[in-house]
Amino acid sequence: MEIVLDWPDAADERLRHEVHDVLHAVVAAGGAIGWQRPPGRTDTDAWLDRVLPLVRKGDAGFVVARVDGVVRATATWQRDPAQVFENCAELGKVTAHPATRGAGLGRMVVGAVVEHAKSAGLEVVYLGVRGNNLGAIELYESLGFREWGRLPNSIAVGGTRFDSVRMHLPLGYAPDVVLHGSAPGGLGSSPSRRTP
Image: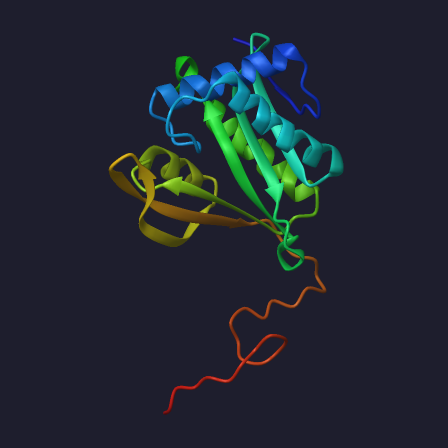
């Protein structure tokens, strides 16, 4: 089995068809990638048409893993559009076609997209994962991601609710960056109103 990573910034008919096949198959198998029902080709084309201009602009990265020449896994990063968060990016559409599960494609595309985001100068990547997706959470943790928050029972799939688990991975900061964190003082601060 030959696996090759590719970084498209435009989509011809073949790429659109193969990406659709992966995204549709993942959702049909129960995957949680933003659609409640398997997406149609119009849906996946519309998603590509939103992501690829961001890729060309340098505000996103899109990787596909081709197995024996056919797309079988995907992952993206997208820069946060808010100016104060432009040093951060969200990972999304991390998929591996169900027919290739166990081949390590998920780990491969996540690792590649994280490195790509780092080379683009980003300082932090983050993602959301459904609380019951324990295998994905374990994969992300093995790559250094840590949970930073959980919104209980916030993901609606029909009449069922799931936790939204938020995870992050620091990619590094320039030596002159001041890490102020939650310390009092500085821009945007306000004094505590609690009485001692």
